[in-house]
Length: 326
Length: 288
Image 1 (cartoon, rainbow over the protein chains, first blue to last red):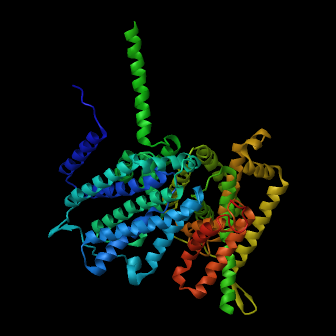
Image 2: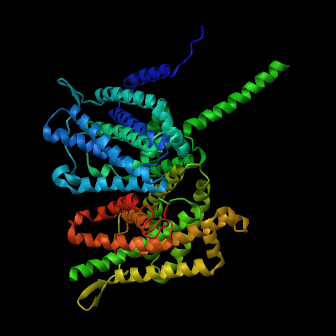
Image 3: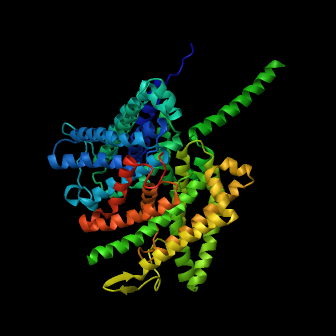
């Protein structure tokens, strides 16, 4: 009997693999990197809806991320309630940002939108840095409580890892189902031909806002996770470089590909650390690799490899066929 | 009244800087259709080549250093155009172009850090001193910024209107296919445009040395505010870029009189967002 592999099987296999990963890693620093990868996956899954599927350039992800982190951190700090309620605050914040950011995207396109979102990110960062009474200003927020279930606190890197793995799995499942749903198809068609979508009787405006809202919710949730994971946040983290990094992750994984986001986040988070042996030169080498990637494999590195494999496979198959013919 | 006038003058000087930034990237936008997100790093490279290499290390006299910097930056611009802008121009999504230019910016910043070291510095006797007009004290730097910016604008206009290369640049900006049919080498023309843009970048770099220290992030904020200036004046339109730059510079400086000083940096971005929502074509732009 031939067993057909379905996406669900792949997903379960990947999850099992991810669950066993901590047994092979003893170094706490590598565990921290893995946790960062999981957080980044969630952000990029969200960004994929705006930039990947809908094709709207968003360079304000750091702003979304920052608002998520700060709303959850400040909520738990001032009310002394559970971080889980902070997560709810972050989601509400995400809905608000999505509505707010989605609205300009109806009016402006292309470069204008990237400039608007850059403006949004900068305004958020500068406002946070310049209202010290509320946010702690450039000093940041300290001693943010970690997540807990009952009296059990998630404190070590490994405990955090399993918690975040659950978060990421849920987020991935949601993103995957949304991308396959009616919404996902509309998002994709908005990127390809907005006029045709409108002709088919779809309300473009509400769909674009939906894309932004979903993306912002993913971003703010990841921000909240980041805040409670690090225990300390400060506004200088959430700069334009961070927003750029998220778009790079998306690009490396392949625009519009949900599974590619995992690969992209992992590569862009881990590769710079792997290049540390280059000493002073690691950052410049990393940037050059990404720049060459943007020029030569615009569909993402995964697709570049699959295209290569297909070519090799086809050549092999052709050879086989020719032999069979004789 | 005195402080308001003082703020106005420094606002106009900053405005001219923003206007130059807007002109510099509008040139590239018009000729390639790419938004050059690495422009603040090119400005920084210009300042470093001038100050670190020629003035501090080689102890050259300043006019010679300026000329040599212009030549080096022109070559750098042409290299960037042929190596990066020309391939990116043909990409199917502008996302790759944006990321490509951003990566270029990071590479330039890293290169600066590796070559010149991370420590900020400044040079002596460069655009320093003050001039007294009546009761007003004006720094020499502000006056020179205004004069140089006006000269650059006039020179650019003359170049674009009265030379063959400049006319070809305008053709390429309008319609690349038609320009190519008329026998203009589009790729080469883009190299020239980028070289000119890089030279204007180095002018900006030299002018802002007295305002900021020379460091890898010296141009980050004026780079982003330059984008606001371009949009507010009318994107892709050179007179609009100048008007937008002056508008932002003046409003931002006068805002200090009303708002707490810490909010100064936010003004330009808030203006940018308001303009994009209310009038995306800017002051002088055609209706989109």
